[in-house]
Image (cartoon, rainbow, N blue to C red; front, side, top):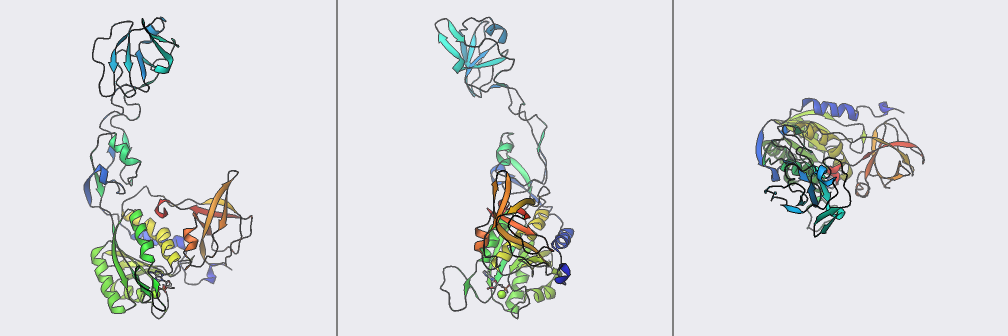
Amino acid sequence: MGCCDAPGLMPLEEALEKMLAGIKPIQSTLQLPLAEAIGFVLAEDILSPINVPPFDNSAMDGYAVRINELAQNQPLPVAGKSFAGQPFEGEWSPMTCVRIMTGAQVPQGCDAVIMQEQATITEDGVVFCQTQVKPNCNIRPVGDDIHQGDIVLTKGARLTARDIPMIATLGVSHLTVFRKPKIAFFSTGDELKPLGTQLKAGEIYDSNRYGIKPLIINFGCEPIDLGIIPDCPKTLKETFEKAQSLADVVVTSGGVSVGEADFTKDILDEVGQIGFWKLAIKPGKPFAFGSLGDAWFCGLPGNPVSAVLTMYVLVQPMIAKLAGHTQWKAPESIPAITRTAFKKVPGRTDYQRGIYSIENGQFVVETTGNQSSGAFRSMSLANCFVVLERERGSIEVGETVSIQLFNSTLY
Ligand code: AMP
Ligand code: MG
């Protein structure tokens, strides 16, 4: 069997291409204090205004010396001190050394620092175990890390916990970043109840908003939670219109399939435009994409695994483009040997949930068990997706499959 066994279903790659094709990155920018800029996308290159370190400084607690004097193998009296933030300022007379601490500016003329563990203080001065050292030993020269004018980060980078301290070392206090995309989201379904309430017959808790919101935040967007909307066309339509007026992207969950209470697609057809609907992926088949006025629309399937999975696989790349995050990379595929069997029928690309580990340098993967799209334990236990190609059938133990380790948005 091949993908013609799933007629009318669009392959994932084609869907992604279509989604990305229309997206124009947000252009509006704002100025932010550095400490508030984490998760935002840079709208400018960051050039270093200074050398880092800004002066030659000691990498050790010890003694600043002149190599030619050290080589004379005589005790060197201490002429003074250089501490971090309090450089030695006196005259440095010949045949003396300067007590120096880590990070302190080395005195003019110093060409080595000897660590204190290799020095003994005597009445005649400091005696060193080693008298032959290489020039600049234990000195961190000016600009050793970064030169003034170096490009440290480029426009389109999303600021991480590693970037913020990097920029702080340059003394840059404010950054120009792109505005975060706003994403309005809501759950649809008469059976859905908010947490903290008692369930009546046939009701379940609305878990999808709790799956969608953290992803929106982790994608670097601003979430707008519009709650639970019943399967009522009028209310749904009003909520679609409200959502579109508030956000760059509207994300719904549920009601996007072919059931009698599935209104999402028809309403999208009425108040917006359908780009495509129904993909050759499992889970996540009924995913719908389109536009609602100036906003983009993503209709996630209601099953909790499908909702999170389609957010991750389809919505994430689109948001990256919208946010101007040009350095975003799709998770890489890694070959892994199966340690359990994986059930599959040909026709759709499966994103099964797996647990990978590394054995003797080789990735191996096992299933998380029940792969029903309603069984969220399979996501919660997993640390990777096992991506099984469309034409593939069931997988035996010992076969090679492609896995995609979860990126930081799922942590
Ligand atoms: P639907 O896509 O509306 O047909 O829903 C498919 C399945 O997902 C049904 O079993 C729903 O009860 C369930 N479901 C829909 N929305 C949610 C939600 N927000 N939280 C948890 N389960 C949901
Ligand atoms: Mg429903």
